[in-house]
Image 1: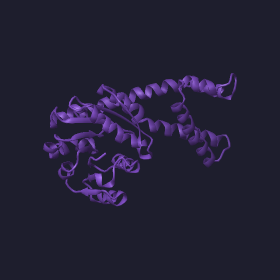
Image 2: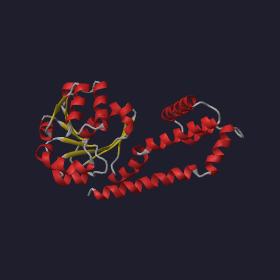
Image 3: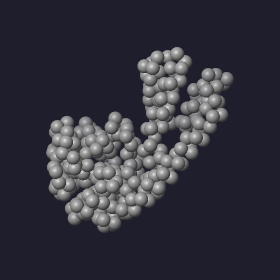
Image 4: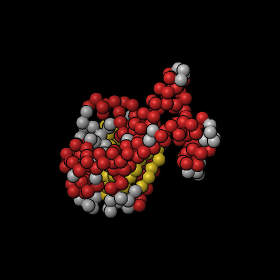
Length: 271
């Protein structure tokens, strides 16, 4: 790819994407330009990745072909106003949580090519889940380009109903926190049963990694995979019976519903 990619904002998500792009060789360090309002952060990113950084957002956007907007939601309007004349000519990729496409179109116009992305924190390990959607002005070439770029930091899914971003936020956006809580519980249980903390942690982590890879690679339903591990009247069956009796499954569903509603509430404030 011979395009220049601008990043407005150099937070953890932006850094993860930059790192993935450079590691995958999809772009070179000469194809990345970054602006950030914090001088120390700009210098840190420049030193680590040997990319060009600038102090002005407008300069950053002007020199790029694709503009990643990686700013905090409360800063989005100001950034769009600063750079709107230039951004209108670019492919705009927003990774700002809760900012709808219509909000960006309201400041840049509906003719601007815009793609909204919801990544999760696992992009920092190259195992993220990114969900994206384009507006009417962006075409198949635009969406495929962004898919290819983001595939350097994990899996990518396109959706066509922006309302579903709330459920995406609740499931994959917040999801790593649920897994961390589950890991804590597994490790704590192991310690209570006499294992050392180090051994419990290692058992819990590798179990989740292994199960995740099995689920991803096997062309089987989750239920079928679960049944394959569950012998009649065995230890797994006994444990699962307790989880069901405690309402773990229904609690997870209710948690996702609550997070989805919270996402809707937060999003409504940014309209």
